[in-house]
Length: 637
Image (tube, rainbow, N blue to C red; front, top):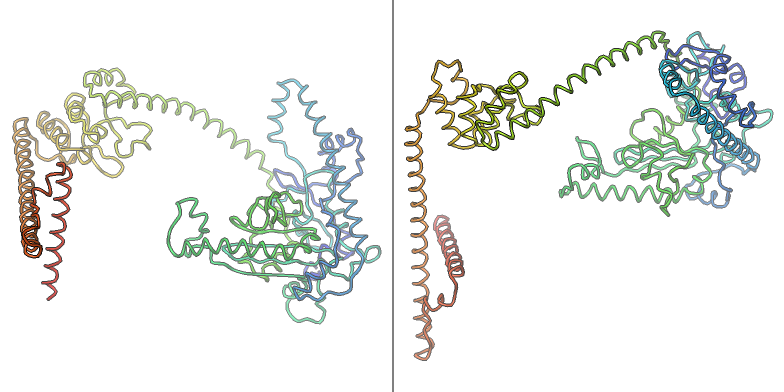
């Protein structure tokens, strides 16, 4: 039978009375999600109702949603805005009655808030007077005590029972659409009755603006879409299409705008500003273009908001769906919602009209705006939430397991802290190269920490997990020999990337210490020398001979380099002198006997040693460049 209910009867601003009258609010247990009656709900939340009565409030007062009264309407500005946007408008009607209702709602809301504050202060003072032990017991009991509420639906919907639907089905309306709050003084059914126009006593106005308007904005990845929507839908009588298509056709857009700017990095996602904040500013052409487009997008939105200001001021609700600076948190500052101190702010932070769209949307387009509006403003037919009767028992079991794990974690944490301290002490001795002190330390703590134990915290010592790894990496050759020969450290242990202590040795002296240790211990000591990558063992004499040979080779190499540099220097100086001599001869011929001849020694006589070296170096470089250029020209020919 639910399939026979047309969408036009489910519109929350004009619900059919035959559909509205049999509706009953559904209440659920917050833990098991088992349906409860309104009587159980009232009995469970009786304390909150009593607080209202004690605060000199009327228990029959029902908290209404905060529907903001629009600013005084300037029809001339609105008409000018609509005419600029090329939107036809039907006849104008007086909206005094609609404004008066909103004023009454606002007064009721402020009254209810004051009562809630009074009751909250009284209840807090009473709790302070209770004994501390009783408070603790109540906290333990309340941990597993469920509440009953119409908000506990496992969804963003408030659910209603109806005899027009099949068993297991119910109507639902989004909590944000009716500003639902979890309070026994809030009645969702009364809110629906208030929102909808009743033909007998309050027929829906023919003027699209007098019927009420709302705004909806979406922004994502540089795509923006916005619209001002009237609560008076279009008539789809005689139109062709499916029910969903006709529902979209019924949305009356007073104004709409979409535009796009390239602000998102292709195939990687994320705005350029977010990338700059996380990894620093890039200097590519694409990043510069994206930064410019982000600023241009903000300017486009700012201009649109300023153009739509007369309409936005009259909106009852402002729905926002955005990411990044567009505002995932609709009450945060961004491109659409701005700081109240900003003189250009049209929709300000803290504006109670601003609401988040509580479901996912696709790329912002006009069609997506219509779909979101239909989703928000029509009663949905949905299934009842599944009952979870074992929720409390399961939560208790989980808490017991959690407590046990916490106790075991405490023991493990204590052991971990002790290992961290031992690791730090051992490394401190190792750095000072105090072999006797290290031997005494290892014998004293042999039951808790041995020479092959992993250093803690392990994440900090990923490349040097053992003392031998650490000593090898730091070039402590004497301590490497002490660890292997005297403390019997295992040189075949690998770190996380498969490197042995020998593989990560800092210098040759450290590698020689490994080879000498292998020679001192011998091949039958129980160590798998092949797995250590140490190579052939060496005696002290062999090491000294090899080190002497390498030292001589190094000295010879350095001497050879010096001779080559000196030869190059002399060659360049000779070339320079010959060029200067040829220049001086030419000068003497041209100028005659009266010209004083300046020699190379005279040019350099007034310079310091550093200046002479710098000058000769520059001359040498110029000569090398000239020679290379000449060779290149000859090669090209």
